[in-house]
Amino acid sequence: MSRFPQIHFPRMLTIVMAVLLVTVSPIAGFAQKKKQPAKPQGKSTQPGKSTKQPKEEVVTTNFDDLSLRPIYVTMRTFQMKAKRGSYEEVNDQVFKMNTASLPDYDHWISTFKKLYPEFEIDLLRSDAKRVFRTAKPAIVTLVKQPDGRAIEVQLFGAQSYGDGVTPGTTLVPEVALHFANERMNKPLSYAIRPLEVESGKTFFFAVKTLKMHSTDFVNFVRPGTPVEILDGNDIYLLFAFTVDLDKTVTPARLIDEQRSVEFQETATQKVVAEVPEVYRNAGAGGFVRVRVEVSPEGKVALPDVQYSTFPEMNKLVVEAARKWEFPKSLFETDKNPITSYITFTYPAQPKAQKPTSTAKQ
Image 1 (cartoon, one colour):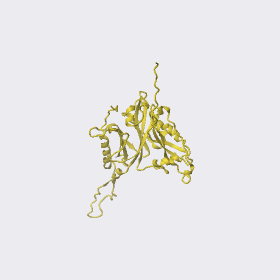
Image 2 (image 1 turned 30 degrees about the vertical axis):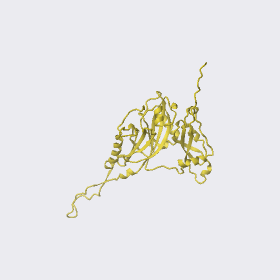
Image 3 (image 1 turned 135 degrees about the horizontal axis):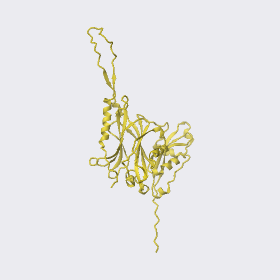
Image 4 (image 1 turned 135 degrees about the vertical axis):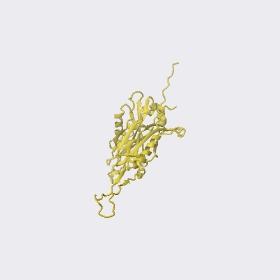
């Protein structure tokens, strides 16, 4: 039986909140009054004409088109791991930072370590989503079990009051355990966090109520991982949401993931991080995909982990990626840096057999 905490928040709160924010804002708080020019005071100079002033015309701004504008969200999922009993109670406060202050993996991890010093924190995945200001969410599913259970993050977008003149935007992430038949088994909600978001900002929080032991974590988040490398730990999930409103920022020279394999082969210097013996003997394996920026000198900068099924290797892989070099000839006609990906793959090795002791005859 799963040891998931059986905590249930009213899931309909999310949908009701999103719908109310979407529907209320256009009719309350954003009506702009347009006054007609005032006529001179006193008697009318034209016989038979009334001196009564015309009523003010109320013009309501049409915000219907906001529902068609996407909110661009990059959701990053991190694991937080600490030895059982070695840490203080997890703080599930929501934090906000400028996205520009988090340019690469090292900055992400150092920021989190200041807030959760007892934990080892590593990125698992990044998911880019377009969220609309409607009651229909964008969905990120971690791992679906054979029986249909899965941890899902549903992202609702809504229009908010803002400052009373300019409308604002609310992003409502809900983290919940979903079941195959949701008519019979309602989702178990672990976190609902309404976020008043802005462009260029990143919001993050740990899910305090979702504490997992090694077996549950492997089943629901990291399938295929040897349980023993996580034994004795409590593991939480930390989610970060980077937001851009109505726009995306694309590098001048981007080589996407599909073409990155060919680009990776052009490297003039490749460094591969070695798997520590403890993980190799346990039969651990997986891959780590790193987004990098290559300068006109062929050097790698700003390595940032994008997806990892072997997060214990993240730090070592980032260090290795910095040492890669690419030919300067790639910049003969265009001096803009190249943004692309390097993927490090580590096939799982057979588990090391423990030596058997022989009894004396």
